[in-house]
Image (cartoon, rainbow, N blue to C red; front, side, top):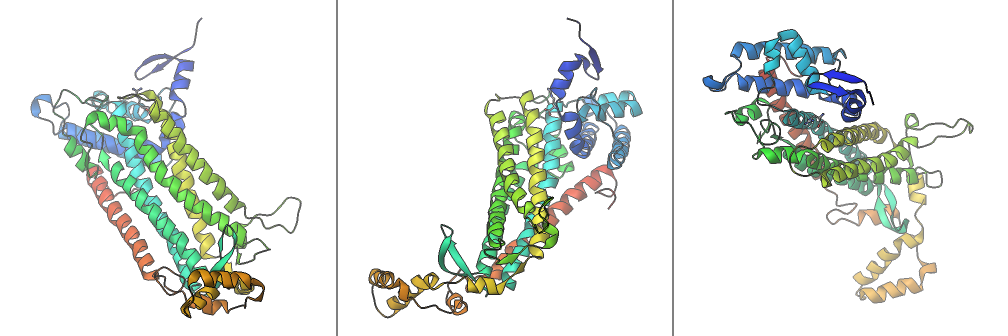
Length: 461
Ligand code: ARG
């Protein structure tokens, strides 16, 4: 059978095979152009500093390559850098461009490097920037949740278990709990960030190269905390790292899905505790009166999708043996999708919470006498009755139960972490610590890239 052939930088390939193997790389790798150029800049800087007998580039050559890389970065910023199917991926697109501009010098750039370690460093550089944004977005959303908690700290709210009325609680406790969940998730994201912050370059195909490259230098130039200590592990950690990151994001999304679920319940007209800002509701094409919480419903489904992204990556990794395997390329799409969905969800919920109103009357009238049953039993305990006797006494007289003032009931819960014992300042301190960490890490990373590229970084700011 005669089939169409395609000429690529690395040989002639059947057109269908090319399309199948490139998969969605031609589009997805647009997210990696910046990282690919930056990684290449560090690589050539290192090549120019190799021992003289094996040096393939001079310092002036490295400068020329970097200048051309900066042009690519600017073109990419303007949406003008194209990755074609013939390129297969961003790595060969950048090499094609460098060779077109610089001739033989462009052809030397791939010395001591493989696309395998190149894509690994690209993904880590991409993830570094993304995870800092995730952390910043978590800080913003937990910030508005914590503000909401402070603003409505003393407003009573029926606490529920099994979704049934349980005990007196407060709007402050509810909102602060959601902030606390996100702050715990941030610790997972940070752990993923730290694992990610290691430089895989120099692994080449998976086993290193027979020339004295300086992996520490490349790692320092790129602002990584250190190089991955084992080159085979540097390649094997691809996919696993993405799934660790997606695992942390799955937890962020679980927290957000619960928040969305609560909000849908508490904004139902039958509850009416909170009112969603009109701008975050959508109408119906047939029912003129509708104000639907579509945003919150999609938060719920996106949480399912981020979990699915992690599952996809886990399953890809599960069957991959040591060394580079092309399967790993397919982890790219769920990885990028999971990051994008989590970030978009954090961003949409922040103004929604910031602008959400409460209906104090509805919150207070929702209290029925039975919500105070346990408080009554504990009053009897304070008078000396053993708890189990008090429990049975209240249970036997449930229809005579007296209503208490919900405001007073809430103020009585003063122990640590209870409605009247919340340490809002501690929550704020955790949020500030995340925001400060993000600023410091970003500043250090961007300073390294500015120095490497010889321009102000990030571009156009
Ligand atoms: N696009 C490829 C990926 O994402 C780059 C590495 C290709 N390496 C190879 N040996 N075919 O994995």
